[in-house]
Image: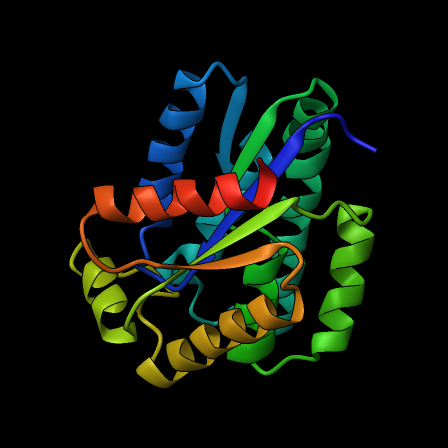
Amino acid sequence: MHRGTFITLEGIEGSGKTTQLGLLEEFLKSKGFDVLATREPGGTRIGNKIRDIILSEDSAELNDRAEVLLCLASRAQHIAEVVAPALEEGKIVISDRYVDSTIAYQGFGRGLSLEKLLDMNRWTTQDLNPHLTIVLNLPLEEGLGRARAKGADRFEGESLEFHGRVQDGFMKLAQLFDDRCCVVDGSGSKEEVHQRVVSALQEALW
């Protein structure tokens, strides 16, 4: 058992996860909490190198199963080096993406076995689950429009149908794991969304 609190932010491309992570980090620090904000894939020196491979348009030929294994390798390093030690220290850890993204993208999106992916992630994470997962939800076209306006990476360049399956996956996971998942409307200004995130956090954890 870890002494800290683990919060994850999930959602489709352009849903505002990175923005909301920053705002939530600032909010919690203003309340006196010791907070660590991080991301997946990445979060470590090794993980960032893996992230570059996964997201690069130069990796167009990357096999779906190889993609999963790279995501899991980054996650294993991330947990061992960053997440678990911070939780042991009693910190609040906020991560931009975690296991749900693998299930949504590689499972629902790529069509790989959900059962196998869940088993592989349980082994990779040593059953380290978030206390709270906030799923930011907004219309698919709006999210992709936001993401692609900044230049598309390998995932952002995928088809609308692919991203539709991913979004559907996030909603199904939120229902399946409703003990820790909270769906938050990602539409509107970043301040409006932040208030919804804070409300969800306070209702779920405090």
